[in-house]
Image 1 (cartoon, rainbow, N blue to C red):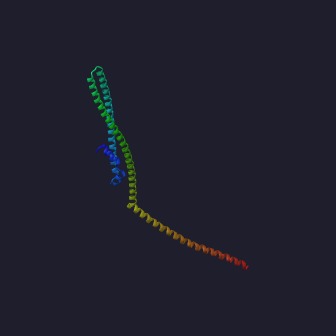
Image 2: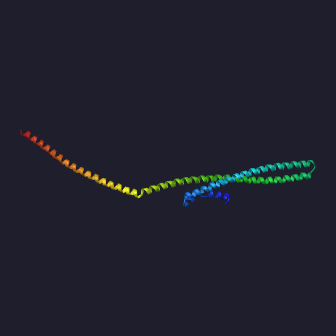
Image 3: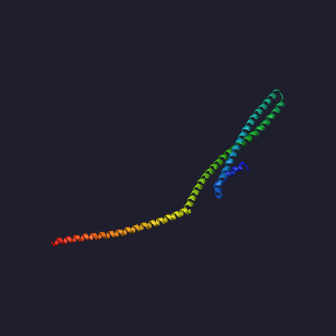
Length: 218
């Protein structure tokens, strides 16, 4: 698969759709990030090669430009010496050099187009990689949170906890019964106390009544 084809597949991929279909989203996102990182390294390496090639072509064009100028000077010299045949041969060589320069300039244009495309692809690929890493971080947080909830639920439904809660409820009922018995005793004791207080009160009233009668008899 060509590098531009790989980049296109990555950029056009729908990360959400891929993760929704994946049995193991975490594993899938790791694989996608690895693929993006490897492709990004490859693209940058290709970019460096194109830049190096462009420099080489530019140097070659400069060399050929000097050669073309040299052949033109030779043609002028030959004409000055009335050697039209040599001047014609020099101009033929100059024309050949200029043809080569034109070919190299066309190649240079293609290299510039390739660099522009690679630069654009790198930007898109970097943005896709940033998005994938953000999704990976979110997935890890969600996985951690989900695992915590699972652990809590498992502990809540653990037999020992259920058994402890049952015992706690049993002791609560026992305490309620004991408190009820205490309240019942308090009620009985209060009732008996009230009766004695009532008797004492009646005795006091009887004494006051006898005291009044004795006073009246006098």
